[in-house]
Image (cartoon, rainbow, N blue to C red; front, side, top):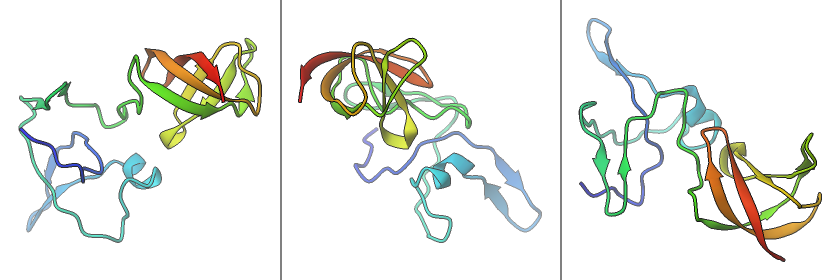
Length: 132
């Protein structure tokens, strides 16, 4: 299955019967993170929960409604700005949707090129490749 470059978000949802209509709920996080606007109209594609979505390089599986996909992947290279220092002294950068990347050895306000080495659902770890 080919996925459009215009895809704004991907989530799992149940269809609820409300008598004269059926309702598919959009998770609050999709509106709050700016992926969709509550006052707009969108096209909706429904895919069976039994099947993942196959792309050329990976399979995107169903994600629980409260667990968005991390916006980074292992091996990805990024330019980030260190916004804060964590309790362990590591640099902290934030990317899309406020997702945190921990960068050991980085200093606050430093802009660095990193390679993402580890990805978890709520944070990633990046290794400094170059100071920018």
